[in-house]
Length: 388
Image 1: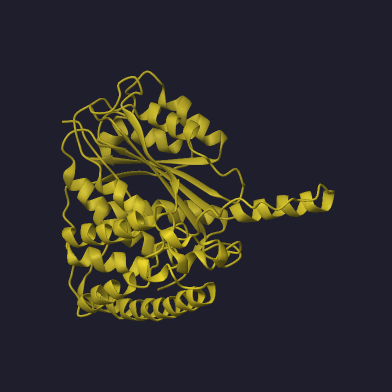
Image 2 (image 1 turned 30 degrees about the horizontal axis):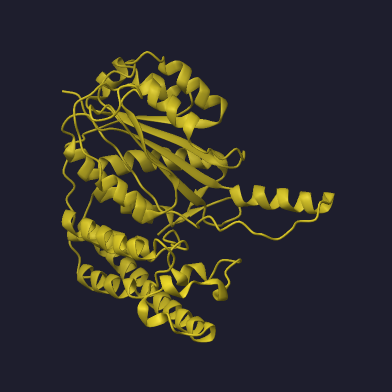
């Protein structure tokens, strides 16, 4: 029976700011400074493309991925680059092997290009459904390499994770050509076979990973993750509701994006209360930034000008405020947010201690497989993980 799906998700740092209209003098010094700034902006960036087989009924694996997304994001809060700062992270999502996708495109669809928007990643993941189809591993790897905006900085970490349970050799495009293309671009291909370890080797999933120095993994995709409740869960969930009240929507998409924040909270809660707790912890980290629709985050951007904020796209109670009054309101919400996020982090530290004493295996198979590969390959780029 054909099927599979995999996922991981991590949190993301910073959003693209709008283009400046300032005129830049055409001098060698200025060009050098701009080049250095451009390179610096891409230093130690982690880019992960997730290629998920959505053929047939792999709902168990999809649910496992949804539940473990926030665990992985939270794990990345302990990652450090060579300069001891947290790396920025971008995630892209593809689905393949689904009959509802275009046969002319090889049953492949880009669900999301590289993004650091945690809410949008969650939304796209929850939108996935399964159906029978043809799984062309080589084709989807090649497509992701060609379509995505891969960072070319040598310090960056570029990774593909592809999951499935059919032979890696299916399709007209030879997977060896696709992974060779990845290797030339310093993109590591990691493969996750859902099923027996030896069967994955026999169907060349291991070979597909080794050609780029990647990791081959086999997991039990039907394994249910047992979440242990803690005395701190209910308090963190209450704080998360208070945290949402510190966001100030603005712009054309502001209303829809702040609504999506609540929808993704509800999606996490529907899976299990523990998942909602983990999402709340992610929202207390530096990877949860929403400068494109939240005024509090936007105000921290270098090019932010409060005088340019269109009042008609603000909540009604803020539309008549002067620039000074609006700035004061933003600052008050930021102070409130900082306090709530600190409370969540402190409670999570106690929660982690409780889990360490009461739960032997806190990680799911998918999460463990992904994190082991990420940490191993990140070490080659001088990344490290601090202790919790």
